[in-house]
Image (cartoon, rainbow, N blue to C red):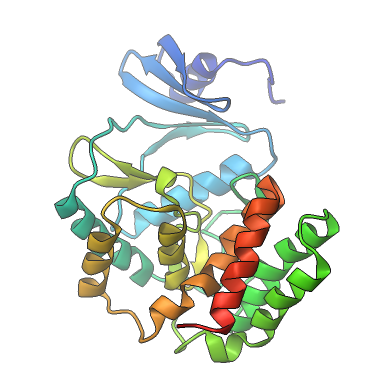
Length: 288
């Protein structure tokens, strides 16, 4: 049985077998805990399956041997303990290397679009929003059915999006086969690659945290970096394209791939993101 009154320090000690000496809250769900072996970060999740999904995602990303992630030191259904990463400053040279590593991560592949990490649940999360990992072989159809339309319907039901606005996004979904560009194999995605999940370490290495990992289109990760900003993004993209050139027209498809995270944010945070989603849909329909 889960002890909902357990402290982060007690959870870290129980899951690692090391005594905790000090705890410093970082947010409502995160704390830095000093163990006798060094500092760790402890994360609490109240939603069922959230921790197992995140742990499976971190391990799947790590198995690619590309971008680094914090090591998982222990977990259960509610708590996760990972390495503490001392922060450094974003650096242009590190950004190029990160681009190379991100390309290698994507190239590690996935069994299908929508494939969950090995051992990960079908019903996972992106941030605080539920996300279903349902495999599919055809990216345009899978993206519409399992990444765009579920959040669009929720936004309409909640009154965040008007029906006439939703019709613009629905037109994009109908035209996805012609808008999606050349077919690509399923990539191994981080899945929630906004700037806050990119840690620039003091050791000159980038680490990725908080994945919503699944098999998807590699341009989706890159579009999310564009959406929420990333230090030295041009250099990241330079490194990425050196390692793995992107298909012609990828710049015109950025809005298409941003529909997923924008609609997730509309469901979680409201009207402003809904308006951005409609604008992105309009750009996808009329690129250039």
